[in-house]
Image (cartoon, rainbow, N blue to C red; front, side, top):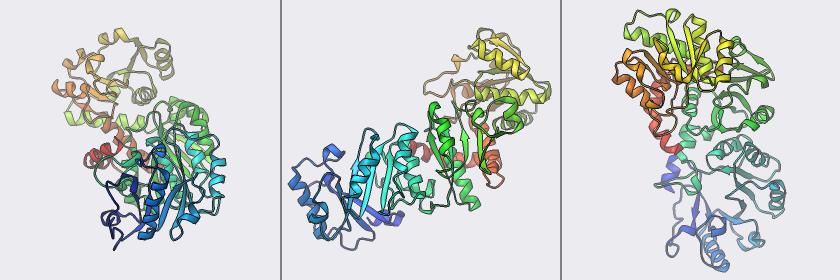
Length: 478
């Protein structure tokens, strides 16, 4: 309790169902924080295996010892009378889903006469999170409502913006209970203690999205500028994208980083688009201004700048305007990079397995395309991997073909899940100048930070933050 308080907790839940042996005497003496006593049944995700009378007697002993709150499940009707002397937190848990009738369950909880109400469900969709969030602030009674799992992390934080009494985090050694984020993640990574009704919300949206390092970069940028903003990760399925923009303002969303598979799909949903988005048909940044969604693309200029700097560092007498570029892939990232290079005058060739998509892209950008099997015959000064090879553990650069590395082209690998991919490792071994995915991410994130109202950042600053903070963030995400 003292360690948790020193780390920033103001309330501690003690899980008596995990207690081995009898309750120790004087365990609340000198406590620095408020205490919630919980003795959770197995069917509610707890560890208590005795009968109900025994379980309630454990909670009664905690009340007599002086706890501030007793968390008791929604179906224990006598809780307010039985545990007189402590405040009553009536709770409902669903560890598998979010019930369709969640609002009805919540109303039933509120009628119990408890001092506060807690509703915790498991989110599988954006709508699951929204149903939980709408409970907070809907009644005058203090309410805690959020969803479990990584998909529900945003709801833990957004609930605070809507006025939740508190939220939960794991503490101590070992894996947190119920997969909760750790206290340091909420306080240090998201500045959760400052989140309030005026906090501006920004988020990366994609599917999947758990690998994103966007929260690390943008939350640090907001703190650096003293802005009352928070940046989250939202897993949004393709069928949910339109709904997110429709309800985004209600959630306080002021800006979005858009990642796959939404970079093209978001464009028709925009109210306005900048010149790059209009020309390329892909968008990675959305900002809410004047009641309208404005789309931008920071991938293209970031790629052009990163490649120019790599060429300059290597001392090559090559300009992008004269460069021959082979782009592998025809998705949103490939479109942005190829489009940015075409605008410099580079001779771009797109190679991809999907004939219809690659030919459509090449026609749209005014460049050439070739069949995937013909890629080895394309002479090039710059090789761009904009496929998904390298995203999954075990992916090998041989899946792309390493024939061209012996001619030492400049290599850009857009994958930023890992610091080093198989492709970048082979490229460096062959003496090729390399632009890795984190370089590209740092460049586009620096531009994005400016669109999000933050200070002007350099890609070098973003990269330094990633190198110093990313290992701990990866552990938390896992």
